[in-house]
Figure 1 (cartoon, rainbow, N blue to C red):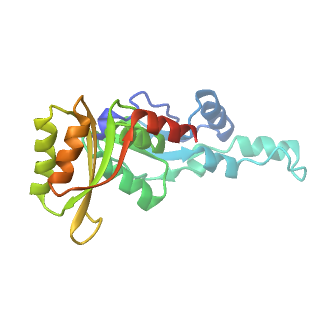
Figure 2: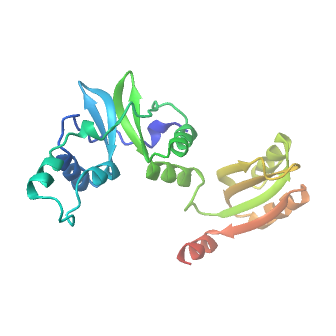
Figure 3: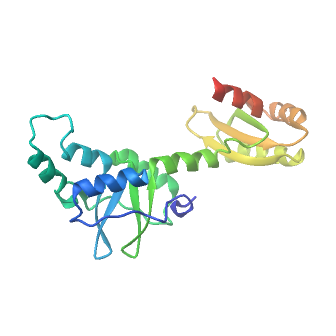
Length: 222
């Protein structure tokens, strides 16, 4: 899965000389938390809502004079922005940006192609992407099962789904579940679910849990 499928292409940006007070207003008006900083159409930095909050004086700070507060809001974005920010390309794998966010403890990554900003992807976008990939909200059953640590074991499960004409809507594999077994989670939709589950047991798979759409909705309500 590529980043371009989930990134925001319409990106709100500011210039390095944008006053912090103005940048704060842009963030609030557009309900965003990150602003890429462009100079001559090239990405030179990124500034976050947290950066601005730390730089601007609190309205409750009575020790500051009105003049000092005004001066603070007129400071330029370049004074607090992160320079040379981490970037990704639109055709980079989704998991790469997730690892970068975790490694550098950042909440958004600008997407650059041919040295031009073409998008931005955030923590919320990553969460939404993985939610869709895992088939959350799809109809049918979510089946979690332990199978042998071999590719043939996965093929066997897929073959059983095919035999019972089950629609396979999502697949995820956790290979390091144990030394001998991997954890396979599938989402399926079809009429012969009970017969398919019996066939999975007969194939040697150990089924840990089967959840219907109703079961998952009840868990969300809890």
